Length: 136
Image 1 (cartoon, rainbow, N blue to C red):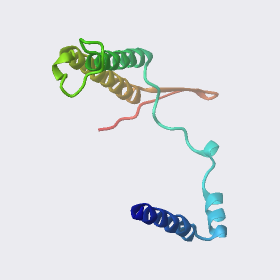
Image 2 (tube, rainbow, N blue to C red):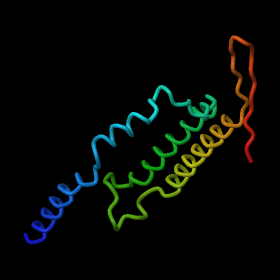
Image 3 (cartoon, rainbow, N blue to C red):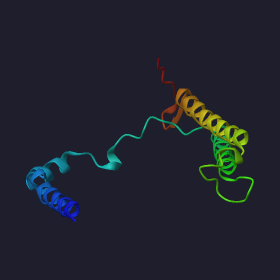
């Protein structure tokens, strides 16, 4: 009971003291007015992942996680494994499923890298613009 009282008092003190950190209302309004609106911000530089990489990587990741979880949770006696049933699960299949999920994540990463390093083609009223970002 004593611990509960200490926790409640600490939460009250913290809750009531946070308004002291808020600052002046006029300063907050001025700061909010200076920030750009979401529509005025530049679009992000990243490009979408190519579809073959996206679907292959997603399928491998989801399938690998499903197989891995099934193999680690499902055991030979039809119940969830306990502390003493370590050897009752299919560890080899579980490890293969997790490795497949890791491979799917790697495919997604490679697709993202490929998308960011590909040239960008922009069509406009003045013509066609092709640009490529070079990074080291």
